[in-house]
Image 1: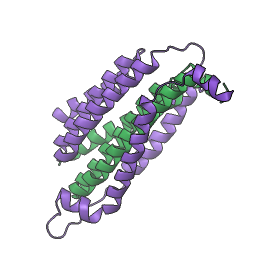
Image 2 (image 1 turned 135 degrees about the vertical axis):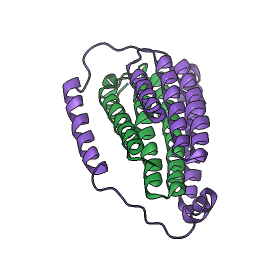
Image 3 (image 1 turned 90 degrees about the horizontal axis):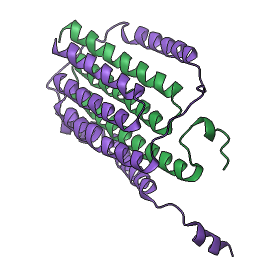
Length: 103
Length: 163
């Protein structure tokens, strides 16, 4: 594996983390927040596999990435069900309107 | 060269997933980013994870997004964001610079001895605790799906119960 590929993938990891973090900060829609979390977690997963690749322990990185994928999916399921229930009970998905936590 | 194309495609898909005004379009761009991440994982020598990412990340999660967006509906917001964009850019810049310093610092050198264990051996012998954690997470996901599929409360029935 040449250094160019490693640099290229590190740029992807940093880019995904930056995009996800930025979207997490500026999003007002609850479903958009879940999208931002998905992008963040993808960056972390690629970083784990890359770390396994660099250190020569590909399967170690893969097993950690598998746990991350499962956690990522569950985060999406619970986040989306939370968004659906919030929409039903409060009538909006706007995070700004939900800050009082009152009906 | 192919790595550069995949990386650029993935970043473009992620940016459009964030910038898209309609949530459904956003979910489709996210699926594209997942598919390209799966391709990159395959190219990095992790085919098992690539297959799982493609089926779960690009397939199942996209279906869940479309389902949830259909139930919750599209909504556009006007007015200022809770956090201003310059402040968000500054925070992201600080986080990425700190992470970049950590990642691009001293590289880890490979220290291998003997044959490498296979993926199944690693996950069932070395990482049994992770497997139990995944089982617990899957049960949590089942409860989450119940929350997603549950019906709205019937107000007339609720009123009868109170009397």
